[in-house]
Length: 189
Image (cartoon, rainbow, N blue to C red):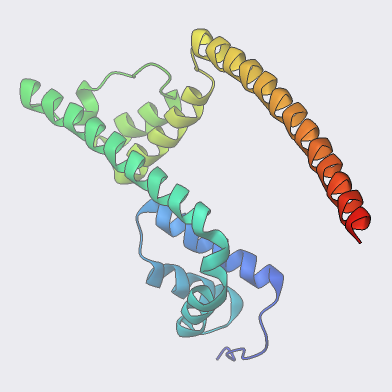
């Protein structure tokens, strides 16, 4: 029987908790299952993990949570589009889906071989395909878009320099005004 820890949380445990919860959010799983997984890994109760997450850790990871939710919704959208394509293919030919699918651009041979060998498409196969497809698409940003972003960046850099210069002038003017007011106050006394 494993003893349940009740000592203080350390930063490594907080990181493990955050990592696992964010992964579960991205994968569309529940936070409760994340707390159970962390509880097993750290020899703590899932309730303690949930309490720690909600009381101390969640606030630090608001932006990461939002990003994970966005990734989850993108994954669901891509998955539904892929499944629609599979359903259309199988309806047209009336054969098992795995035997009629063709590799899409950028799809790994490993995923297709697995699909054909098992004669069914599992959720694991679809998720594996989607993650590899996502990685391959990262490098395919159009060059026009890159050039547009570079020119926009240069424009913003110029604007920033202009604002910095204006701030410097305003600061000098403010100090000069204070100096004049200080002299005027001394003369009035």
